Image (cartoon, chains in turn purple, orange):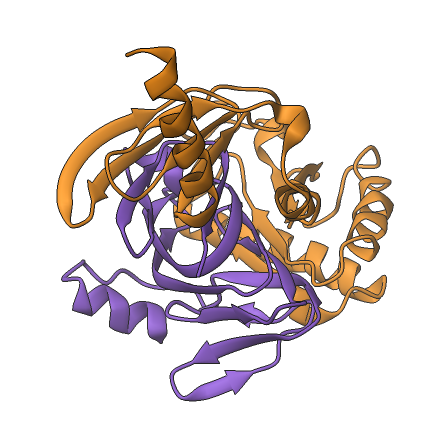
Length: 144
Length: 196
């Protein structure tokens, strides 16, 4: 549902979406962590299914690891606030777009199929900059 | 620039490096080259491509890239890298012509998959079925879906939780061995299982 709403909002053609709306899963959650979805504050456990628009939040002892359906992998460090603003992926063509916002904290990324599909199809925002990911392993840190 | 002027500047840059947003670019797990481009800085469009591996780039003010010693990452950075999930694994299973029966050679793969899932908490298992080009496209869409569901049923029977599993059939699309229509090809009668 979220995927569809987002697609319309972006003016993209809405193709037949497969039955799954999930974009990724939590693999590990340690210490104080939460997933903010609209007004809801959810508690992640391994297997928790993520949706576009979700915000990953960790406290000072919190950590989260997650994978996305395009094979992208994230590790979120303590004191972080990171939003998946946009995630649109076609499993058939293996193309899409992916925008993550690191409001604060730290994020390690190993990019997946979306970053390979088109130049700058995967972007990371920080409060001061916009990054285009061209297929790699990297860390973004945004101190308070 | 004289060395006397340079020293305080370098010190202040070092201090700033800790307090400002930054990008640390590392080699891929296979040691391959990658790059990240800075497309905007403080609201202004720029295009600074960072492709120096083992480097740190400040993300506030004009982007500057400096080499770092990969053996001297901070404790926080090391912890982050260590908690990245392992790469996905993929296994291809083959089928007897026109059926949802696995070839005898493919059957042991099921145990490998079950083992792999048990070692990955919160796993996502994607099962994608395919056919060769013998028969109509509609029949093959159906057959590929049945093949995927057959594997899914077996994995569920081996104790993998159904909510970890999803199945999709792709018929004659994405042939592993390209052939014209109406060709028997064992390598195309397959299911690909991806575990993330």
